Image (cartoon, rainbow, N blue to C red; front, side):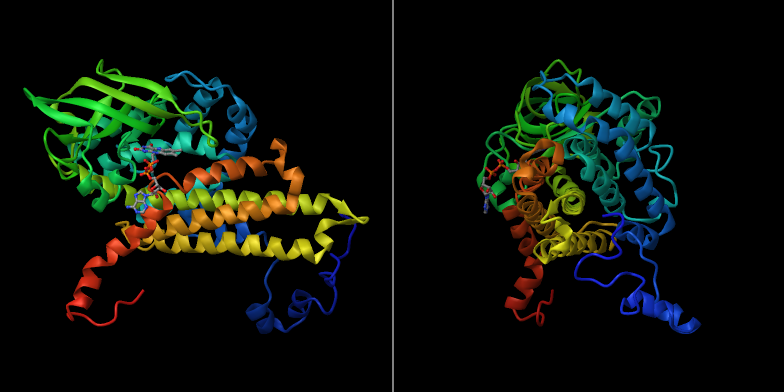
Length: 461
Ligand SMILES: Cc1cc2nc3c(=O)[nH]c(=O)nc-3n(C[C@H](O)[C@H](O)[C@H](O)COP(=O)(O)OP(=O)(O)OC[C@H]3O[C@@H](n4cnc5c(N)ncnc54)[C@H](O)[C@@H]3O)c2cc1C
């Protein structure tokens, strides 16, 4: 393949009929207006980003390739770990990510490690850039690192400086020293998954994790399930209803892992993202002091929804990273595999789906970047539509990749089957894609009601 002057069906890059060649022959101004270098599309996108984000993107790619790629197989195939135990490779990854600043870069010093230049951009955008790079290499390791930011989000979004100082600063100091200090986010209950994310469902459901006032603090009782990293986190942002009240009374409490009332019952054996645990947690007369409350009494529902608004962009970005990997694997396979004495890439039957996969991936990224970069506050409709659109399309891209590789795609060393196992999970967590579709309409509700009442004209999208 290296010696080929052109791919079948195309004139060679140096031929007069090749558009780039012709553009290069134009006069100086013509060249300036038309000619462009042949650049890897990832590189092109990176160059077009503002400098601090381009730097972050390169750093994350390098980190993923150097520190995550060597563990992909080990952590995906490791036997199911006991709750609370971390595989040595996962532990090392957390230390390395901490030292690289990837666990602490939501906020600037003295609370975190984001630079002031980075802070000019919405955190959802920065985090989407980071997560795409990590998800491209391994969905499970990415989730192990990223669920931590989900756990921190309600504290950061509460704007509660006391809580930031109390919880976030020590976490940053630990990670800088190479000591893993994870946070986790606990909203899901055995009887409330979507109902913990959708107001209409929450209205009819009764929360089972309940906080009861005791002295200066609260006693928490109940169970949370499917909590990413919940068994290995040092702190968990737990959402609980006040005794005798519904989800509207939800209050967020930071519970320390060494609290005697907190127990990790088990972790799920998941189809994908196996480097990250999903734990069932039991709270039994778990006492938390009043200063463990985040954002104030009955402010949990709003904090939960705000957290999901900002975390759904990174989930969309996970999908972009996985779709991008599917494209890379498929391109490589079509270059290396021969049919009738020629590389598969010589056949249009392979070129057409490859072009479709690349276009789909770039369409997802354009959507995510455009929506996530738009505003410092994450809007629900924009975050939710990015999430369901990107994760649905990414699964389609991975399916296309599997079709191209056929039975070769089933072999774990190719990486395609793992992508398919991992991508499916992104369509479930942070709200199933059905719930995210409903969230788009929910966000438009005030305008739609105004339209119904004749108070405004056409509601445009
Ligand atoms: C890998 C993984 C990691 C996770 N990590 C976390 C975590 O860190 N913290 C956490 O709190 N949770 C976590 N979750 C839980 C996740 O958020 C829930 O699984 C998700 O919200 C769906 O809830 P459920 O599984 O109970 O499904 P259900 O709510 O029982 O839904 C079942 C089906 O009904 C549909 N449905 C439900 N209500 C409606 C409706 N009103 N209209 C239309 N369709 C509806 C759903 O779309 C779905 O298809 C994780 C889940 C996974 C898979």
